[in-house]
Amino acid sequence: MSGIVGSTGAKSGIINNTENQLMDITSSFTSTGSPWSIWGTWKAFYFNGFVFLQAGVYAAAASLAQHENFAQITNSAYYPSYNASFVTVNHQGEAASEVKITANQQYIQVRDIYNTGDSTFRVNFNGWYQTK
Image 1: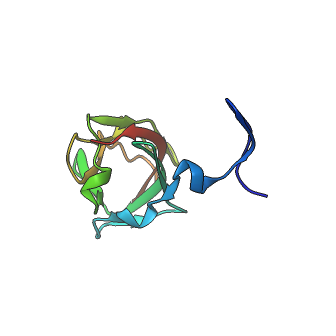
Image 2: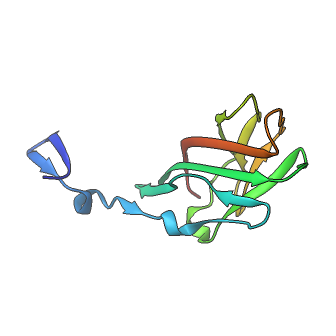
Image 3: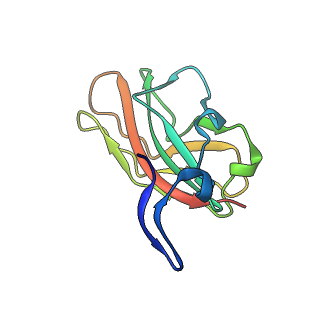
């Protein structure tokens, strides 16, 4: 059994993903390539004008710029309508101030990178934003 159990006014019972038009859009998010790679499992879902994103990337590089584009949105229908900012979770004392997607842009950027661990910088993030 899948879906959400609950009540929606006159209709009650199981509400499935087809009724809600929940779509898996993970394939619309890709890495920009070297030195960035996907870390873990990426998941992206679209529902009623909102994108929900869970992702992680790593860069095996001796040095990185303060602001790095690490991924892109390949379908403009899923660009944010405003500057979307996500809190980051890092590894081995590494840090970043945010992951940012600029309004109506395709690139996803990690900002203010501070790499104190080994030579590989890692970042995980999740959140949501409204599409244009």
